[in-house]
Image (cartoon, rainbow, N blue to C red; front, side, top):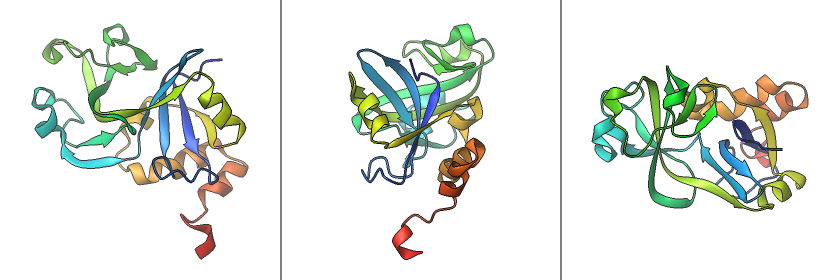
Length: 178
């Protein structure tokens, strides 16, 4: 079963510093592997400095997000489109990738998020991590990709999932200090 368009929420058991308290939007998942974008790691680089052609699009006035540790020099734009057919690769609802050669002035982009790098898993790797359990899977909404406060997204998605996950959301960053 493909997890494309779903969220991976790092569980408290996941201590890898690249993914601690992160939310990853799965953008591709099949038998050959998976790819996703960390939604909760802003950088200090402004979008207008990294990708000037996106300046002026809602959301492009912010900072580039760190999409993950793989190919940190690769820049990807995830957008919400008025016409979902304009997306290079749809992810969730009307949210998908902007083609690198697209003329953004001609697209119906409502808002955009720019990422440097991505998160990747080889065939079977993500499934093994789900068995550990390193990740909690949740449904994504278009708004998750464009949240204004990335530090709160981890907590908010767990609370939205409810039950025992709402309790996890209340845990301090380092439970040993509780």
